[in-house]
Image (cartoon, rainbow, N blue to C red; front, side, top):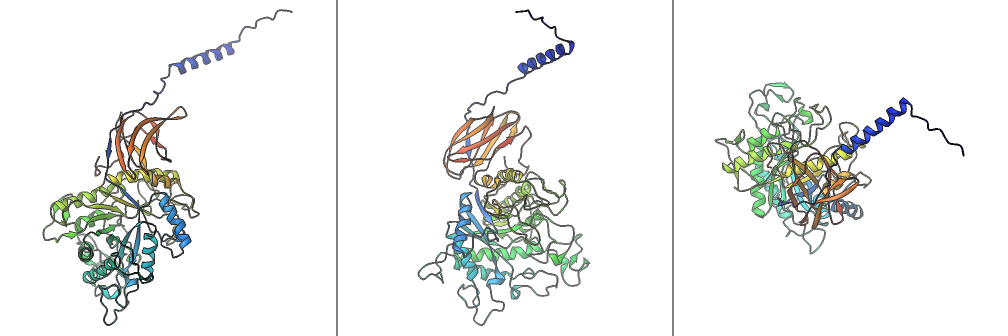
Length: 536
């Protein structure tokens, strides 16, 4: 067999061989990420966080429906993600008579003239599945509004009468006290309701007018119904304080254990005055400071009668209708709004004002107050095309929102919509946990099992979450294609937990308990998620 000649490598081949050798050397010299190890994590048990649904009687996801089959399907979906409370809107003007008949007794829920049929159905349907019910009352009948109502004022908003409102609140609390006979089911009682909210968004002209003191007849205006606001005094906080105090006394007069929640403030004041649309308003922080009789952070106002409440409330949306720092797309829950407006990161400012007012005796009774967010959410694709975010982004923002709000004095969060709906006022409501078809979005997992890590130092993160069930919870880190445990601890059902984990740089983390797995949290090296007004 003839010998083969050994062919010497060409210069190009030599270069290639050298390049491969150098690459192999560089790869061997690169530091290997350390294998995650199980750490002992000390867990601090946090205050409970109740989760619920607002606007549940939508076209698609009707928890209040008389259709038992449809009601059961959507109630089951709400239960699956862990919803505990449902907020129901109560329209005073629709239940009360348009003109009180002779002998009408406003404090008596059985008085002729009242029509409770629709609300009874809603309360029955929601309570039958074990949800807590929250009733939010607004919209006065014409006979309970003030005199000299301008043509541009929204019906039901003009200087509602506190005495009339209190009498209706008495009738409402009596009817849902748990001892009132159910008119449709002989021998049974209507369900017990424990949470009552006095009005909605009173810093917005759609719900309360006037907002400013110079809105009456003959006032100087920039246009029809538009006051010149420079130096003008606020009117709506004083009007609302009278309504709130009458409501509080009435509800507590029926049952002292009921919880009275002040109205949720609308998040943003708008620069353009269009009273026929009801969209001009006072900034949320300025309104609540005036309601709570404080100026700035903690200065009590003299000659200001105290407000009575058990809980404060807000609807901290982001201003998708107003071009902001992120254009016409939301910035996310860590973004802080300017000029006294209140987005998610600013809710702690409301709690600070309330705490100062309680300390000064300007909010009664004294003692720690609950905090409610009764509407919040982000429109998502594909239902919402403009000013919307992806479903994945919305789910991660939802976890961040829970974390920030729980550190801002909030005890109850009611998400806007269980499912996406058809357009409302020409705009789709696409912030639901489900698509209209019933398919769960990623946010359904964020709702059921929120989990995240917040960097507090370069070498340490704060784990936070809410357990969907009790048992041993494991925090895992992704390493070379596998999920390895880095922390284990016991949790109770629905427990909000928090603890520190040693971690530098970036990492992919998730939590597991029982048959539940959280979304994956992509931990970066950036700083804290918490705004200055939140407690660490």
